[in-house]
Image 1 (cartoon, rainbow, N blue to C red):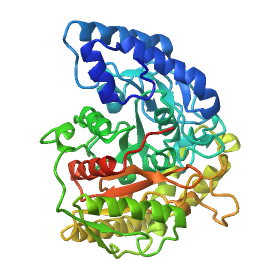
Image 2 (cartoon, one colour):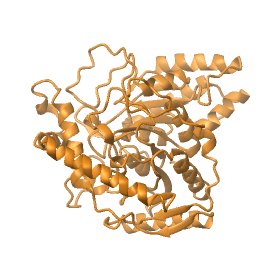
Image 3 (cartoon, helix red, strand yellow):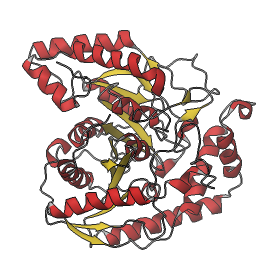
Image 4 (cartoon, rainbow, N blue to C red):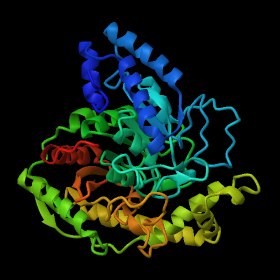
Length: 460
């Protein structure tokens, strides 16, 4: 059986019947890494021996009829921002030494191991996950499996590329300004930023209330299954939410026909590539035909980028300030500029930005008393040439300028998911973003499932 591009759910079904084993699936994933990662550069660490040990243990559980859970034995990966026992976590930086004890698992890594997932290795990230593409002085450029001349997006670009190319069925990324949804859109997979605190984080992110962890997969069902695994509270995160009331695995099948969706093609201020706009509009029409009530309207806020910049650069400066003296010399040049900017802000500036973040959250809370979900493009442009922080020739200077649909909803801490909506005329994926009120992760997954059913899409 060729499982190279099976979903996690399909793999587990094959395990249950004996048609496929976790060892075979893991070997196939490792072969995909050997075949494709030289071009994509999605992984910064692969541990085949450890992965095969996990797969053998899973095979025994399946043979004995005692799998740990719904994802036991599924090949997966984890972004190199999460602490992983026995593996270095250098965050794409030359300033973090790999030669030190690595004896702690983050909550994400711990939950993946407890659920029996086979963790193949760690995926690439730009230095400290600071930007919307994935390249770094340490790991080089991560490329899009759909078209390797293009960027995979970021900062969870390694995770997106791995999943899209069949180098593991699942991954977990981080999202402080769009970093799960941007690469999901560019690579043609599903990426969810759940409600803040839904997935516990440790250590605390310097990006504070902006920072989320999120599951990445090739289907909405798989995304929901992985969210079930990751949503268990952890005492090391004081902002972690209580356990979910029900399973996301079941909630994804909720009937959402008749619910009211606001469709905002531009948020009222974004310039969108015409092809992207048409692909997203066609997907929204399909949702309407399927029974979702669509009303075209904007949420009514101005671009919050100035406040986001203060929050983002302050967090970067805080983290970089802990690096050894002389680190500036081998830090990503773009990150050095953010570092310098972040050191200029006062406590009053930060509190003003925090107040604007809170006001935006209140505005969106009121908006969702009238609309169940908000639908937008995920990114206003398709993937551009790899190796650049902004599209060449665009006249833009900073990555948030080309991803204005994502970072506002980090500020509001709402759940937001990117789902493939179609492709451009050149075959580049286009993502559609579904945003719900805080704590409505189940709802955004259910609407995403409806879109997946009416606009089926398979990664290249």
